[in-house]
Image 1: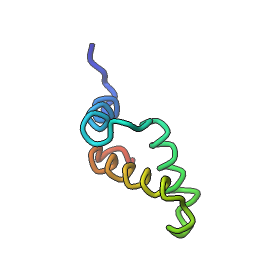
Image 2 (image 1 turned 30 degrees about the horizontal axis):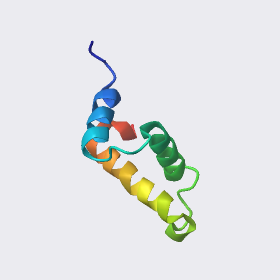
Image 3 (image 1 turned 90 degrees about the horizontal axis):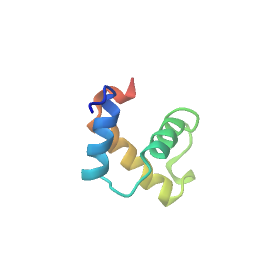
Image 4 (image 1 turned 60 degrees about the vertical axis):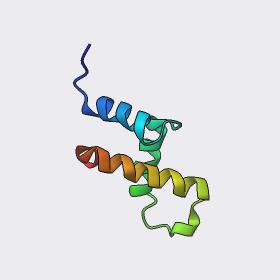
Length: 69
């Protein structure tokens, strides 16, 4: 069975090769919130875990160019 959603394909690749132990749905949700509502907050306002997750989110954006749209 073939999926038409490119995020499904890229998400699987991301999960297998870049970061196998993350919840991609939560990662995308939190990344969008941080890029929007919390974009003005300084870096030190985030916990080390949140900063690490944001770096992983940025890796996901690099691997799926159309995701930012």
